Image (cartoon, rainbow, N blue to C red; front, side, top):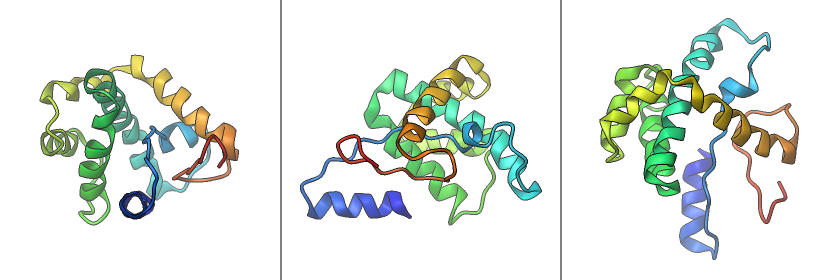
Length: 138
């Protein structure tokens, strides 16, 4: 919801949104979370890695379309995070299907951790998402 709201704000105000990766899988790593969130948290690593790979291959502009395509499938679509769903999102976002191979590439995990840590520096670790920062202040 907040990402959609920010897109509306961007239309009517003099703001330019920069989208960064925040991983609930990183945030909840090692935490005792309710059973109903465990699968999504475990599988969230796959999507996070693919977003990192897309950003690396196609630049920052690839993050929002991929995030939107995946978010639409997960939230109103009530789908689970799995490779077939990520592949659909890549296709909708106009990104290479080859990026799906990053889902299992743990070399992207540090990028996920670093990007999430940047947000947590602003607000602490007792949160979900999103984190909105203006000029480095949340």
